Amino acid sequence: MKGAGCFALYVAAAFALGGALAGPLFAALSAVGLAPMGFPEFTLRLVQLAALLGLWPLLHVLGLRGAQAFGLASGTTGRSFLAGALGGFAAGALLMALLFALLLALGARSASAHPGSVEWPARLAGFLVSAAAVALVEEVWFRGALHSAFRRIGGVGTALFAVAALYGAVHLIDPGPASGAGDGGAGGGFAVLRGAFHRFADPDIAGAAAALVAAGVLLGVVRHRTGRVAECIGIHAGWVLVNKSGRTLTTTEPDSRWAWLASGYDGVIGWAACALFSLAALLCWHGLRPGR
Image 1: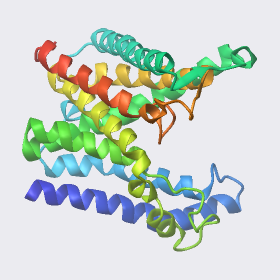
Image 2: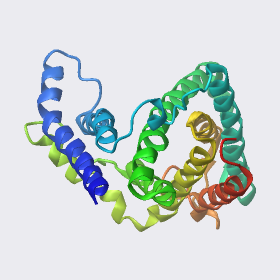
Image 3: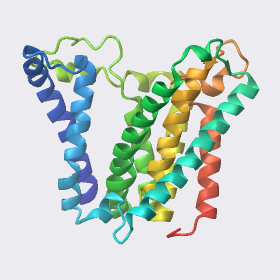
Image 4: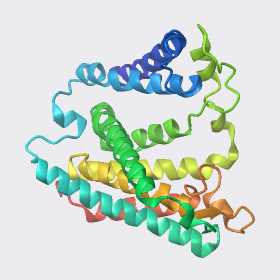
Protein backbone atom coordinates (compact mmCIF):
# COMPACT_ATOMS: atom_id res chain seq x y z
CA MET A 1 0.00 0.00 0.00
CA LYS A 2 2.87 2.34 0.74
CA GLY A 3 4.18 1.97 -2.81
CA ALA A 4 0.74 2.43 -4.38
CA GLY A 5 0.16 5.52 -2.27
CA CYS A 6 3.51 6.96 -3.36
CA PHE A 7 2.63 6.44 -6.99
CA ALA A 8 -0.81 8.05 -6.56
CA LEU A 9 0.87 11.04 -4.92
CA TYR A 10 3.38 11.20 -7.77
CA VAL A 11 0.60 11.36 -10.40
CA ALA A 12 -1.46 13.88 -8.43
CA ALA A 13 1.58 16.12 -7.90
CA ALA A 14 2.45 16.09 -11.61
CA PHE A 15 -1.06 17.18 -12.61
CA ALA A 16 -1.32 19.73 -9.78
CA LEU A 17 2.02 21.35 -10.57
CA GLY A 18 1.43 21.37 -14.31
CA GLY A 19 -2.07 22.80 -13.96
CA ALA A 20 -1.06 25.47 -11.45
CA LEU A 21 2.09 26.66 -13.23
CA ALA A 22 0.86 26.52 -16.82
CA GLY A 23 -1.03 29.82 -16.80
CA PRO A 24 1.61 32.01 -15.13
CA LEU A 25 4.50 30.48 -17.09
CA PHE A 26 2.70 30.75 -20.41
CA ALA A 27 1.78 34.37 -19.69
CA ALA A 28 5.40 35.19 -18.79
CA LEU A 29 6.77 33.53 -21.91
CA SER A 30 4.15 35.18 -24.11
CA ALA A 31 5.00 38.60 -22.67
CA VAL A 32 8.54 38.30 -24.00
CA GLY A 33 7.56 36.56 -27.24
CA LEU A 34 8.85 33.13 -26.27
CA ALA A 35 5.64 31.08 -26.13
CA PRO A 36 6.75 27.87 -27.91
CA MET A 37 3.29 26.40 -28.68
CA GLY A 38 -0.41 26.77 -28.02
CA PHE A 39 -1.54 26.92 -24.42
CA PRO A 40 -3.31 23.50 -24.25
CA GLU A 41 -0.24 21.69 -25.59
CA PHE A 42 1.99 23.76 -23.31
CA THR A 43 -0.06 22.64 -20.30
CA LEU A 44 0.26 18.96 -21.15
CA ARG A 45 3.99 19.30 -21.81
CA LEU A 46 4.39 20.96 -18.41
CA VAL A 47 2.57 18.06 -16.73
CA GLN A 48 4.89 15.64 -18.53
CA LEU A 49 7.93 17.63 -17.40
CA ALA A 50 6.68 17.56 -13.80
CA ALA A 51 6.17 13.81 -14.09
CA LEU A 52 9.70 13.32 -15.43
CA LEU A 53 11.24 15.45 -12.68
CA GLY A 54 9.18 13.56 -10.12
CA LEU A 55 10.75 10.23 -11.06
CA TRP A 56 13.79 10.77 -8.84
CA PRO A 57 11.85 11.30 -5.57
CA LEU A 58 9.46 8.45 -6.46
CA LEU A 59 12.32 6.01 -7.00
CA HIS A 60 14.13 7.33 -3.94
CA VAL A 61 11.13 6.67 -1.69
CA LEU A 62 10.80 3.15 -3.12
CA GLY A 63 14.47 2.46 -2.39
CA LEU A 64 15.57 2.33 -6.02
CA ARG A 65 18.94 3.82 -6.87
CA GLY A 66 21.35 4.21 -9.75
CA ALA A 67 21.18 3.68 -13.48
CA GLN A 68 19.63 0.23 -13.08
CA ALA A 69 16.40 1.82 -11.84
CA PHE A 70 16.09 3.61 -15.18
CA GLY A 71 16.75 0.47 -17.20
CA LEU A 72 20.30 1.55 -17.93
CA ALA A 73 21.95 -1.69 -16.85
CA SER A 74 25.20 -1.24 -14.97
CA GLY A 75 28.12 -2.96 -16.61
CA THR A 76 26.65 -2.53 -20.09
CA THR A 77 29.13 -1.02 -22.52
CA GLY A 78 28.17 1.76 -24.86
CA ARG A 79 28.77 -0.55 -27.81
CA SER A 80 26.48 -3.22 -26.34
CA PHE A 81 23.76 -0.68 -25.61
CA LEU A 82 23.96 0.73 -29.14
CA ALA A 83 23.87 -2.76 -30.65
CA GLY A 84 20.76 -3.54 -28.61
CA ALA A 85 19.09 -0.30 -29.69
CA LEU A 86 19.91 -0.90 -33.36
CA GLY A 87 18.65 -4.48 -33.19
CA GLY A 88 15.47 -3.25 -31.56
CA PHE A 89 15.12 -0.55 -34.21
CA ALA A 90 15.24 -3.15 -36.98
CA ALA A 91 12.68 -5.33 -35.19
CA GLY A 92 10.36 -2.40 -34.48
CA ALA A 93 10.55 -1.09 -38.04
CA LEU A 94 9.82 -4.57 -39.41
CA LEU A 95 6.83 -5.02 -37.09
CA MET A 96 5.30 -1.68 -38.07
CA ALA A 97 5.99 -2.40 -41.75
CA LEU A 98 4.11 -5.69 -41.37
CA LEU A 99 1.19 -3.77 -39.90
CA PHE A 100 1.10 -1.40 -42.87
CA ALA A 101 1.37 -4.34 -45.28
CA LEU A 102 -1.60 -6.01 -43.57
CA LEU A 103 -3.71 -2.85 -43.68
CA LEU A 104 -2.84 -2.29 -47.35
CA ALA A 105 -3.64 -5.92 -48.22
CA LEU A 106 -7.04 -5.65 -46.53
CA GLY A 107 -7.82 -2.30 -48.11
CA ALA A 108 -7.99 -0.40 -44.81
CA ARG A 109 -5.30 1.90 -46.25
CA SER A 110 -4.21 2.58 -49.82
CA ALA A 111 -1.15 4.01 -51.54
CA SER A 112 -1.02 7.80 -51.61
CA ALA A 113 -1.66 9.43 -54.95
CA HIS A 114 1.22 11.92 -54.57
CA PRO A 115 4.12 10.28 -52.70
CA GLY A 116 6.68 11.89 -54.98
CA SER A 117 5.67 15.38 -53.91
CA VAL A 118 7.25 14.90 -50.49
CA GLU A 119 10.85 16.07 -49.97
CA TRP A 120 11.96 12.74 -48.59
CA PRO A 121 15.54 13.38 -47.38
CA ALA A 122 14.50 16.28 -45.17
CA ARG A 123 11.26 14.56 -44.14
CA LEU A 124 13.02 11.31 -43.18
CA ALA A 125 15.65 13.22 -41.21
CA GLY A 126 12.90 14.96 -39.27
CA PHE A 127 11.06 11.68 -38.69
CA LEU A 128 14.27 10.03 -37.44
CA VAL A 129 15.08 12.82 -35.00
CA SER A 130 11.50 12.79 -33.70
CA ALA A 131 11.50 9.00 -33.40
CA ALA A 132 14.78 8.93 -31.48
CA ALA A 133 13.72 11.70 -29.08
CA VAL A 134 10.27 10.24 -28.37
CA ALA A 135 11.63 6.73 -27.92
CA LEU A 136 14.45 7.78 -25.59
CA VAL A 137 12.26 9.88 -23.28
CA GLU A 138 9.29 7.53 -23.17
CA GLU A 139 11.24 4.31 -22.73
CA VAL A 140 13.50 5.64 -19.96
CA TRP A 141 10.32 6.95 -18.33
CA PHE A 142 7.93 4.01 -18.78
CA ARG A 143 10.03 0.88 -19.28
CA GLY A 144 12.88 2.32 -17.23
CA ALA A 145 11.78 4.13 -14.08
CA LEU A 146 8.09 3.20 -13.91
CA HIS A 147 8.77 -0.46 -14.71
CA SER A 148 11.25 -0.55 -11.83
CA ALA A 149 8.81 1.24 -9.53
CA PHE A 150 5.88 -1.08 -10.26
CA ARG A 151 8.05 -4.15 -10.05
CA ARG A 152 9.06 -3.04 -6.55
CA ILE A 153 5.41 -2.32 -5.70
CA GLY A 154 3.77 -5.48 -7.03
CA GLY A 155 6.12 -7.75 -8.97
CA VAL A 156 6.70 -8.52 -12.64
CA GLY A 157 3.04 -8.91 -13.60
CA THR A 158 2.15 -5.54 -12.11
CA ALA A 159 5.10 -3.93 -13.87
CA LEU A 160 4.09 -5.36 -17.24
CA PHE A 161 0.38 -4.57 -17.19
CA ALA A 162 0.14 -1.48 -14.97
CA VAL A 163 2.85 0.37 -16.90
CA ALA A 164 1.28 -0.74 -20.21
CA ALA A 165 -2.12 0.59 -19.10
CA LEU A 166 -0.55 3.87 -17.99
CA TYR A 167 1.36 4.09 -21.28
CA GLY A 168 -1.85 3.66 -23.25
CA ALA A 169 -3.74 6.18 -21.13
CA VAL A 170 -1.07 8.87 -21.48
CA HIS A 171 -1.21 8.58 -25.27
CA LEU A 172 -4.97 9.16 -25.25
CA ILE A 173 -4.81 12.36 -23.22
CA ASP A 174 -5.63 15.23 -25.56
CA PRO A 175 -7.04 18.70 -24.79
CA GLY A 176 -9.04 18.66 -28.00
CA PRO A 177 -10.16 21.68 -30.01
CA ALA A 178 -12.42 23.01 -27.22
CA SER A 179 -10.20 23.26 -24.16
CA GLY A 180 -11.93 26.38 -22.89
CA ALA A 181 -8.61 28.03 -22.06
CA GLY A 182 -6.86 28.84 -25.29
CA ASP A 183 -5.15 31.96 -23.94
CA GLY A 184 -4.10 30.73 -20.53
CA GLY A 185 -5.04 32.60 -17.39
CA ALA A 186 -4.55 31.82 -13.71
CA GLY A 187 -6.74 28.73 -13.76
CA GLY A 188 -6.30 27.97 -17.43
CA GLY A 189 -4.09 24.95 -16.85
CA PHE A 190 -6.73 23.17 -14.81
CA ALA A 191 -9.37 24.06 -17.42
CA VAL A 192 -7.24 22.34 -20.06
CA LEU A 193 -6.75 19.27 -17.88
CA ARG A 194 -10.46 18.96 -17.15
CA GLY A 195 -11.14 18.52 -20.85
CA ALA A 196 -8.05 16.46 -21.65
CA PHE A 197 -9.70 13.08 -21.01
CA HIS A 198 -12.56 13.40 -23.52
CA ARG A 199 -11.18 10.55 -25.65
CA PHE A 200 -11.73 8.08 -22.82
CA ALA A 201 -15.50 8.29 -23.38
CA ASP A 202 -15.23 7.70 -27.13
CA PRO A 203 -16.11 4.07 -28.08
CA ASP A 204 -14.29 4.45 -31.40
CA ILE A 205 -10.99 4.66 -29.52
CA ALA A 206 -11.29 1.14 -28.06
CA GLY A 207 -9.13 -0.50 -30.73
CA ALA A 208 -6.39 2.10 -30.39
CA ALA A 209 -6.48 1.85 -26.59
CA ALA A 210 -6.13 -1.94 -26.76
CA ALA A 211 -3.27 -1.63 -29.27
CA LEU A 212 -1.40 0.89 -27.13
CA VAL A 213 -1.71 -1.35 -24.10
CA ALA A 214 -0.53 -4.34 -26.15
CA ALA A 215 2.43 -2.29 -27.37
CA GLY A 216 3.23 -1.41 -23.76
CA VAL A 217 3.08 -5.06 -22.74
CA LEU A 218 5.41 -6.03 -25.61
CA LEU A 219 7.94 -3.38 -24.61
CA GLY A 220 7.60 -4.41 -20.97
CA VAL A 221 8.33 -8.03 -21.86
CA VAL A 222 11.47 -6.96 -23.74
CA ARG A 223 12.52 -4.82 -20.76
CA HIS A 224 11.95 -7.72 -18.34
CA ARG A 225 13.77 -10.28 -20.46
CA THR A 226 16.76 -8.12 -21.39
CA GLY A 227 16.99 -6.20 -18.11
CA ARG A 228 17.50 -2.86 -19.88
CA VAL A 229 15.76 -0.32 -22.10
CA ALA A 230 18.19 -0.31 -25.05
CA GLU A 231 16.11 -2.68 -27.16
CA CYS A 232 12.90 -0.93 -26.08
CA ILE A 233 14.24 2.41 -27.27
CA GLY A 234 15.13 0.89 -30.63
CA ILE A 235 11.78 -0.85 -31.08
CA HIS A 236 9.88 2.32 -30.19
CA ALA A 237 11.98 4.45 -32.54
CA GLY A 238 11.44 1.96 -35.37
CA TRP A 239 7.69 2.11 -34.80
CA VAL A 240 7.59 5.90 -34.86
CA LEU A 241 9.76 6.23 -37.97
CA VAL A 242 7.81 3.70 -40.05
CA ASN A 243 4.46 4.96 -38.74
CA LYS A 244 5.19 8.54 -39.72
CA SER A 245 6.65 7.54 -43.08
CA GLY A 246 3.85 5.08 -43.78
CA ARG A 247 1.14 7.63 -43.05
CA THR A 248 2.82 9.94 -45.57
CA LEU A 249 2.93 7.23 -48.24
CA THR A 250 -0.58 5.86 -47.65
CA THR A 251 -4.04 7.16 -46.89
CA THR A 252 -6.96 5.83 -44.89
CA GLU A 253 -9.92 4.18 -46.62
CA PRO A 254 -12.87 4.93 -44.34
CA ASP A 255 -15.33 3.15 -46.66
CA SER A 256 -13.42 -0.14 -46.56
CA ARG A 257 -15.10 -3.06 -44.80
CA TRP A 258 -11.86 -3.44 -42.80
CA ALA A 259 -11.49 0.22 -41.84
CA TRP A 260 -12.41 -0.62 -38.23
CA LEU A 261 -9.07 -2.42 -37.89
CA ALA A 262 -7.22 0.92 -37.92
CA SER A 263 -9.76 3.57 -36.95
CA GLY A 264 -10.09 5.93 -34.02
CA TYR A 265 -6.54 7.18 -33.42
CA ASP A 266 -4.18 7.85 -36.32
CA GLY A 267 -5.60 5.59 -39.01
CA VAL A 268 -2.97 2.92 -38.28
CA ILE A 269 -3.07 1.92 -34.61
CA GLY A 270 -6.18 -0.15 -33.94
CA TRP A 271 -7.39 -3.74 -33.61
CA ALA A 272 -4.96 -5.07 -36.24
CA ALA A 273 -2.05 -3.50 -34.35
CA CYS A 274 -3.41 -4.94 -31.10
CA ALA A 275 -3.37 -8.47 -32.55
CA LEU A 276 0.10 -8.05 -34.04
CA PHE A 277 1.63 -6.55 -30.88
CA SER A 278 -0.01 -9.19 -28.68
CA LEU A 279 1.39 -11.98 -30.84
CA ALA A 280 4.85 -10.39 -30.74
CA ALA A 281 4.63 -10.09 -26.94
CA LEU A 282 3.82 -13.79 -26.61
CA LEU A 283 6.68 -14.74 -28.92
CA CYS A 284 9.11 -12.55 -26.97
CA TRP A 285 7.94 -13.94 -23.64
CA HIS A 286 8.58 -17.50 -24.76
CA GLY A 287 11.53 -16.81 -27.06
CA LEU A 288 13.67 -14.40 -25.06
CA ARG A 289 15.56 -15.76 -22.10
CA PRO A 290 16.30 -13.41 -19.18
CA GLY A 291 19.47 -11.45 -19.86
CA ARG A 292 19.41 -11.93 -23.65
